[in-house]
Length: 207
Image (cartoon, rainbow, N blue to C red):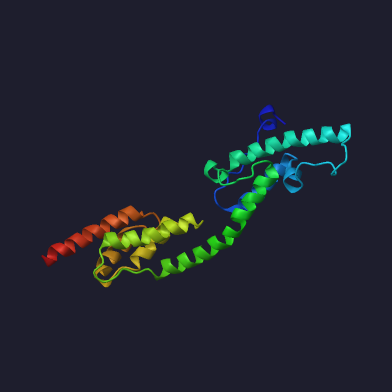
């Protein structure tokens, strides 16, 4: 093993809102440091009323020092705004338990929200008389909500959706765009621009 390989430190997993994945990777990280037991069992405490032996006192002090390191890892993994909502930061176990209570259930909520947003995205269609800007705004509002709930939306998926959900007056320009562009690399901004030009031309013919 080279010196560079020997001192490579695994990155601390940052909490990005996806609790299940983060907790799994953070647990692996702490297990690799032989510190996971502090999350599971906490700092050992002597039995009530019993006087701890010298060995027990030493073990408790060592556990407290290790717990400070685990807390430091958690402070680096969790954004300040979230940490401020955790009242009990006394031990790493308390921080972990608070995160679990706050976010484990939210994974199911996010999944349900995402299903509803997918249905909304599928049903979106341009209304008769609606402007290109207005329709693009409606589409992108739903797309951004999907992304914030963990959906990896490819730009080409959004482009294809827009093209197949425009009103019939755009049929000609849709055919033209599909024939002259690779839809796999056409950006939403480029499509928006093309549709605006077509819309302006139609308005010009009407005046």
